[in-house]
Length: 78
Image (cartoon, rainbow, N blue to C red):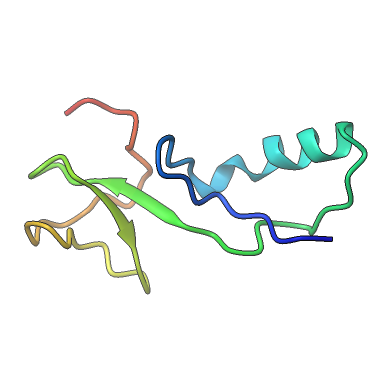
């Protein structure tokens, strides 16, 4: 069994996407872990619109210092 992560350089899926990933792996007949082995939390900054990775629950944009929203907002146009 290998590692499974939601880290993506394009789509930036939320950690809540695990059920869809698990279903796809199950349908393919592949052994899988019970959840992502490495979860990445993505947020779009409402201030500068850059994509950020939240580290250690610090919801602050590394580009401009603005607070990042708690809810996933990568696909939302602000």
